[in-house]
Image 1 (cartoon, rainbow, N blue to C red):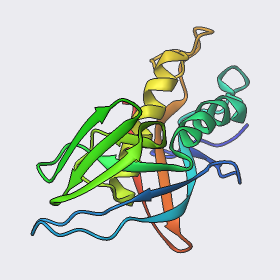
Image 2: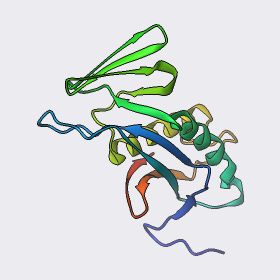
Image 3: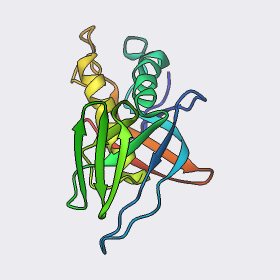
Length: 178
């Protein structure tokens, strides 16, 4: 029998070479300035906090891998633009997306741009956006409620999603289910 200590939990860590996305972005600043358009080879790591590990509560790593992979792929080789701020205006015209960012006009092929409803493109906000999308995918798959699809108590207590923009530098966002 595995001893269970008060306030104890298990944590799964999922970190694979395929959980990455290479994207271009511009970080904006409050004074109206911005960084030049540049890119990163972001890597993603997921930690899943579990309250139990009985046989009935066992969840395959593949559940998380199958949901996280497509989320990373959607941002891979794309330009990420933050649209929830007053310094950015975007308008799609035909096959192009025109973005005015801090007074500078850019025109991109629309299929190469992902407009995110965030205030800025930073590791912190990318982590929170990706975590939110993963939670929605877990809900839609029956893995975020009080019970698993099988009717057994859900051991998932929360997730912590890490977005690393360069080795040794990144951010994480935690979402707790309860």
